[in-house]
Length: 71
Image 1 (tube, one colour):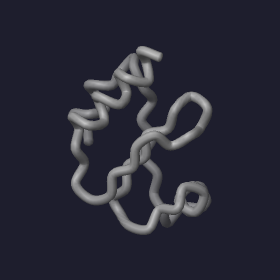
Image 2 (tube, helix red, strand yellow):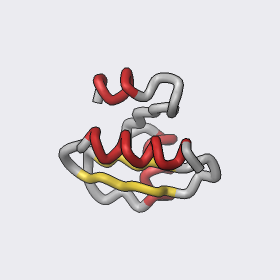
Image 3 (cartoon, rainbow, N blue to C red):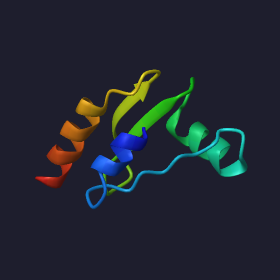
């Protein structure tokens, strides 16, 4: 995840939330998180465009971020 954060500097904001914290719980409920780790890529309107549960696949995330930026 750290490498992905570095790769996305200037392209996307990366937030890490602890599902045991109040804001983490609220966000998990909002997006229907059922397992951890879960990565959710959200567009500028707050709409999820990609969800990954378990092992994070950076290539898919980078591809989707680039697609959102090209719109």
